[in-house]
Length: 372
Image (cartoon, rainbow, N blue to C red; front, top):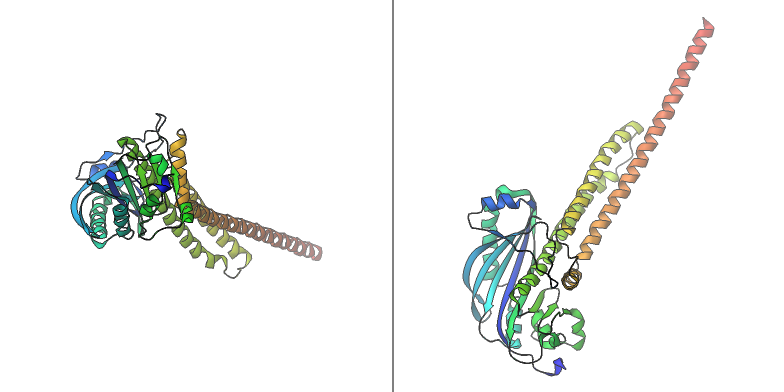
């Protein structure tokens, strides 16, 4: 069994460190392209295993941000920084650290352990370029966020290994899970449940965890596709997290007004109409934004990439944030319904008063007529 053998040494690989920032509601990609001083290009469509392409309506822009020499643990590494600009208002920085020399899985585990929390020089590099790119993109940014939320992820992309068991047979090998989690201590056999693995051919393997992934793939295009899909999953996670926080803030702002003391019928009617309009506008905005994030990438024609992408969303717990947004929408809809009923009640009360007034007027006129 694979677990009883030593995992083959890694001959060539690259560690990708991701830092994503949600800076705004949206970024106009065409205006961003015109604004950037650095040449930029659209990311190529993802090619599926079956030959078709995965639907990404708005492919992000990609630009190179330079190269650096940085200390990570006991190493000094050469790192190449790239950024992708998403129309969702997200900037995704990717620091590529090539591993040209042969690596054991023990040395890779040590490297992954050192980046579980990014070292200060790595974070300083990310934050410096965030400020620079944010300033450059200002004309293309729509509705900047007051709070910039972040998400990070690491992917080890393995191009070639020594002779030994095929990559697909290493799915349950403890060394790979230990490396992905950056755990220096030996893991229990039960820890295997913390990872999800996929293989399409004998020589490829994708191992997913909540904080990092290992992709063993000799085909360069497939490696790029896997990395882009995992990056996109993290971008969607960040977008849902940010919008859930904003929706909760809006709801918290509305709750005290919902609980206010009831007013007289006419004042309540005017307040309810205005409040209803505000709530319906918020419901429409949340629904539209959720759909925009949800439809940013569709994996429909390719079963393999669909399973990988769906598994990544599950492991990253994207559904938790989706559900939270849906719960906020439910509360808002129930509130709107309550206000509608209140408005109807106010109208009914006013109509009753009007009928009483008309009857009183008729009685007065009748009495006056009799006296004359």
